[in-house]
Length: 407
Image 1 (cartoon, rainbow, N blue to C red):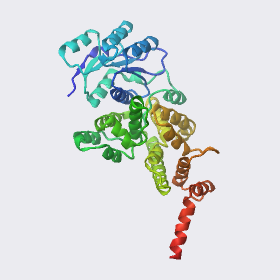
Image 2 (spheres, rainbow, N blue to C red; image 1 turned 120 degrees about the vertical axis):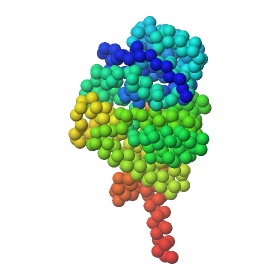
Image 3 (cartoon, one colour; image 1 turned 180 degrees about the vertical axis):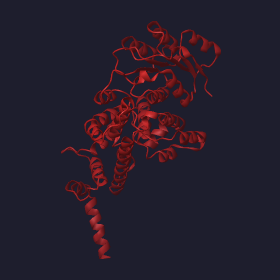
Image 4 (cartoon, helix red, strand yellow; image 1 turned 45 degrees about the horizontal axis):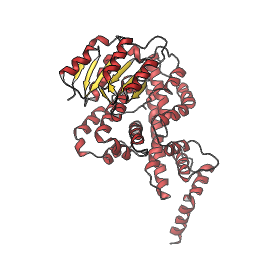
């Protein structure tokens, strides 16, 4: 069990005057741990701008240019000690919350860090739920609510440049149950368990592609591949961190209902894309993933609407929901596809759900656009019939029907 040492003297931090968003600095040389810390922070501090570094000198340069409202650092870094960063922070402010997260759990190390005025010391491996709780205690609501941002459009604009997590209904108890039997789980079992959870699948792809690109330059395109890259234990920790994101659970009934409809539509697109891919002899996995993530922009817009509702105390009208999605979904969707480190071909498949260029259109994009039309029950429309004909599906099925009639 991880050691969690707390100091209560630094719990009154708030963003500095004039800042629109909370700025968080994370420093850890383990890339997967850094990504997990990002998920936990984004769950505890919705809308925060999060910057991750693996090197001390890079973090120090960033701090000098852009001081943060919350600092989380490892002790042992490839080019120095996290204590040096803490000293730099304390030269600027005594009140900015600083957490030390380290594999060093001896008394001398804890006292040395405490002497520098840290807000807490957490030993690795840490418990995600304990860290999340500590962040909630450490960073007051006033620091998270971005007092400099008042209108919905300002919140949407800010979301385009911050860490975005999709709304979801991931059950914490269910994840904890899986964690108790992680020795019996493999990547395929988890991928099947989570196949209808776009928020979780997006996070798995994000973390796996970030790690895979750094190590080998190769891309990861399916949930099963992603879980294999990061490991079952890390996948479960990411799932637990997402499940703790209370802001990710849409409390406003109209927003929750709209999210349900968007997720159902994404699932229909995914199922249609998988069926079409199988008919033309392609592996269906990447098509299913693209379909499941095709409503990411809409879901992100709904989460920002929920944050706005929480702060204003006024539920949005249906017209406001429609207007916000119509204007912001594409912008948010394009932003988060890049933020999640999705491979270019997967991003293009998601884009094909909405639009096809007039030239150089690959067969895979035809599949995705046709799947979107089938999911929207536009099978008799001219565009859908044309796409199916170009894929050879309409002709093939007609030929099969004729053969059955002749027999």
